[in-house]
Amino acid sequence: MTLPRDEDGIVSVIARVLPRPPGSVRRGIGDDAAVVRTGGRTLLLTTDIVLEGVHFVRGGLPYRLIGRKALAVNISDIAAMAGRPVFALVSLGLTDADRASVGEIYRGMLPLCREFSVSIVGGNISRSPVLFVDVALVGVPARGKVVCRNGARPGDRIFVTGSLGGSRLRKHARFVPRVREAAELVGSVPVSAMMDISDGLASDLPRLARASGCGFRIDLDCLPVSAAARDSADPVRAALADGEDYELLFTVPARHAGKVPSRLAGVRVTAIGEMTGDGRFQALRKGKRSPLPRAGFDHFAS
Amino acid sequence: MTLPRDEDGIVSVIARVLPRPPGSVRRGIGDDAAVVRTGGRTLLLTTDIVLEGVHFVRGGLPYRLIGRKALAVNISDIAAMAGRPVFALVSLGLTDADRASVGEIYRGMLPLCREFSVSIVGGNISRSPVLFVDVALVGVPARGKVVCRNGARPGDRIFVTGSLGGSRLRKHARFVPRVREAAELVGSVPVSAMMDISDGLASDLPRLARASGCGFRIDLDCLPVSAAARDSADPVRAALADGEDYELLFTVPARHAGKVPSRLAGVRVTAIGEMTGDGRFQALRKGKRSPLPRAGFDHFAS
Image 1 (cartoon, chains in turn brown, red):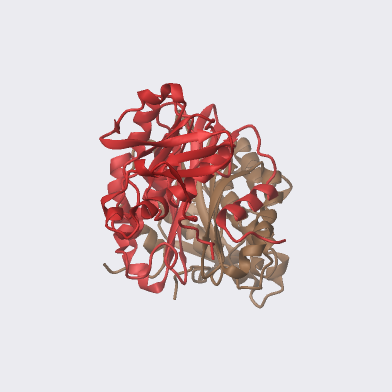
Image 2 (cartoon, each protein chain N blue to C red):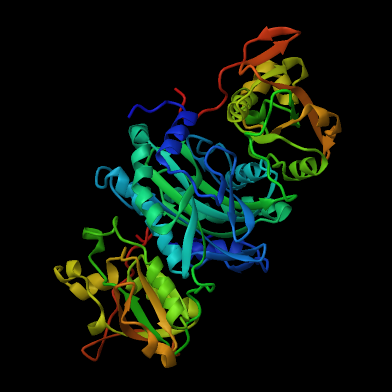
């Protein structure tokens, strides 16, 4: 079997191997979290990992922040479905050098557990040649409804929370998942599609568009460029491609776009463009077509 | 902080770091699976990993069996709580050499998915210096009740399913989790405590006893020694300490012990001893005290 070199491609191989899911699986592989039904209830399920040499370098991040980030990226995935996190499982891979720091890794998670009412209910520990923290997280809908990334329609307006770019320099291990923002949003306005921006807008908006069978047109002059990205050589490119923003990217039907709050839980919301029916991924800068930078962060890209 | 060298010790460090869980967590860290309540329903949550160099050596196990085993050990944990598995998340760590085999890893899981009605609903993939398959599994009670490992009382009789020992030589990657057996058991008789035997009876029965605040006395002449273990130099030691049996270990109050079926879903059930109130871990051989071999399999034991 020839395998694509990129992560999206590997995921599509997996999706072809797996059988068609039963009706209890409302949304399976391919979204920020799975949406399943059991006992008449909707659950959100997700898993994500933070691994030495891929997501951080040894010595580059204190153990507490490694633990914090591993939980935060999973909470962000639940938030992106308009969910709230409830129960976490933590799978640790520890080198001999890490064993004395297992308490620190867990302590790094506790502030997020308190803030978002998450209980760590189990896990496992394995000896490993590299340190990793793999978290699985169970959530429930925050406001009774979930939002997937595949519901956008041509004409829907595109929004992002917060600001984009420069996260790798500063906030990537300390970001606050947008749980409250997403809950407030779906309580305010019909949201057609949503995801979190983990690999950069230039990677993630095409994913939302492909999942929804749409194209898009965004105005790069409208991007909320972060202060950190503004210090870089190419601020717009940084905002598009740096990745690890963990902001919400969402779409709202045009007739409801005026009802989108300008702030959600105190965080700015910015309109950046609209979904289109032509399947093209377009960016405008000062009214002219501008190329989108290539994918942000892909673990398997060469 | 001085950290114990063994896995049980590390788990106790984690348990001390974590806050007291809320009422929705009926059973947290320290059992085969967590027991949680959400939306009026009971869920079982567990996670376990299969990692190159720790649980298998490169080239020693085909990709399909690596995938199969990673799912099977988690299903066994759900079975040990008298649950049935429902939804799985799969977190893969792949070296460049493994990337073409991701389909094989998943195909190895599919027979178990079909047999036990498990849906793989999500996961992630990361580049890694070693191959690993980390599974998180959601289950529900198979018969409306769950069984933890901490409910045994002095006088309860101790039983195991199947046969013990020699698994590492033959069946460890192909074992069938005891889901049906556990469900039939809890439908037949009150079970006070249960767990699966993953690290060997000599390691796991003390865990059940400590969790229950009991001692035990087992009769080594009664052990159901597997055919593979009978070929070894010390068959009883093999049955006690080889590990990876993935059989059920359970206790039943003495007054109900006569109702324990001699077979569960076709698998033999054997009485091996009883729980005691003196806190001692005792083994008898031909009526005389016999030392229990040291712990079976512990990833962190030196």
